[in-house]
Image (cartoon, rainbow, N blue to C red; front, side, top):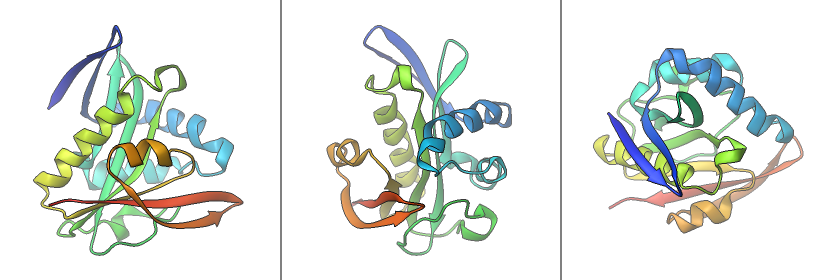
Length: 170
């Protein structure tokens, strides 16, 4: 399923990720999260797309990946960990939907790409009959609060402050 979105004179689409997208996604993840020491390993990113393809989306403009969002389903709310193996942590029947990674390429930030990807993942959450969405962020707390999330906990990892946030669904 592909959604075409036009915002601020820039058109982009949101669609499910395919294996061929992963090199660009890995590069985007590294560029976005390496400064914080929280970039995920390429193997974990590949495994997420294999284990739960419906929960892995990309934003695309002019044939290039400008954003991605990945997710897993869990049995209970907990704090996410860096480089967790989705073959172990993903629970296909779990009621908790964890957004495990999300990044937008710098030139496209503030243009609705992150909102569109989050909304698409929330649609998946509803289809999967999950009751709660959780995520962890280093610096985008205000963005997620605008989308209805609230802080659950804070901690430091590798010297970086992390906030776990949740959205309860009806």
